[in-house]
Length: 326
Ligand code: SAM
Image 1 (tube, rainbow, N blue to C red):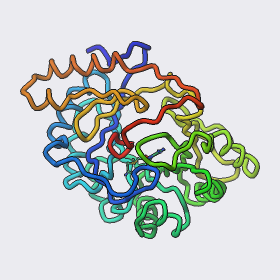
Image 2 (image 1 turned 90 degrees about the vertical axis):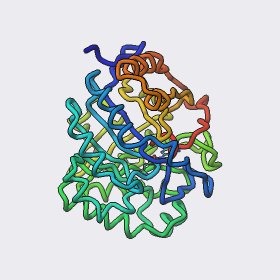
Image 3 (image 1 turned 180 degrees about the vertical axis):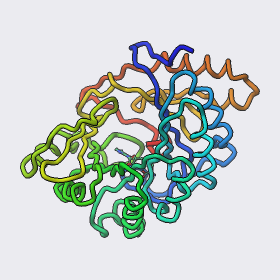
Image 4 (image 1 turned 60 degrees about the vertical axis):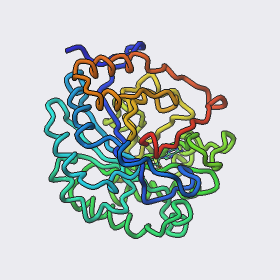
């Protein structure tokens, strides 16, 4: 069966699925205070998500990442993982989580087929964690990271958004943690999403800046694991662990983009930076057969924007990453 290819010859083999818009944190750079949840009836059911992935797999989709909102706030996640892991052609299932609820769930998630995990952690200081997330859960996250390490899930990637004036003085501390814990710390540029007033184009800490700070103290060696995907990954000389840089704001990573997103509301979002989304839930709920849905997905992939931008001209997206699935 022909693969999913867009008009710029990019092969799509990766879907990021937001399984819920709900979250147990209130990160200031993601949401401004409290927010309304999508009614349960509007959120894709697990059966609908499974059907969507089953339809995509024969078109070459191999990789699925579950995200949110906070995916661990949705009940029955091991069931979803098990079903997705059983789909022919799906070889890689991962999860992005804030890890607040992870410690008690790791074993059953692994048993269900989870292969890898990304944990979001923007600061190593308890008081700062509480300020940025508005919740006192730092100890739970650290406990979960330790437990995930002992459980053998590998690699454990820690996603760290660098925000000027908040955590840019912790860059070297994170590198030390990568070495000490043998994890991969991925420094992510702060992106312009949602209605938070924290983002200002003039305040962007670029990956280049972060890398310069690190290179002033550590020698970085390009990692052999560099391949497809947005991160530029390095080993740290004389230690274990790795660091990676994800530069959606300052670099053109669009040419290598191999993914589409499925939102909790059942919309396909072909490009993270474009608010244009396509309603596949209506098809899933209106009795359309698999062939019709397959044709719809192909059409959506075809029109995936090329999306190159300059750092100064980047536009603010209306939706928050909580809605889209970060
Ligand atoms: N709740 C899960 C978590 O915290 O990992 C998954 C959803 S969260 C939206 C996914 C990732 O998006 C997190 O690593 C978060 O830091 C990141 N994120 C949210 N808003 C962002 C922004 N404006 N710029 C860069 N990353 C952002």
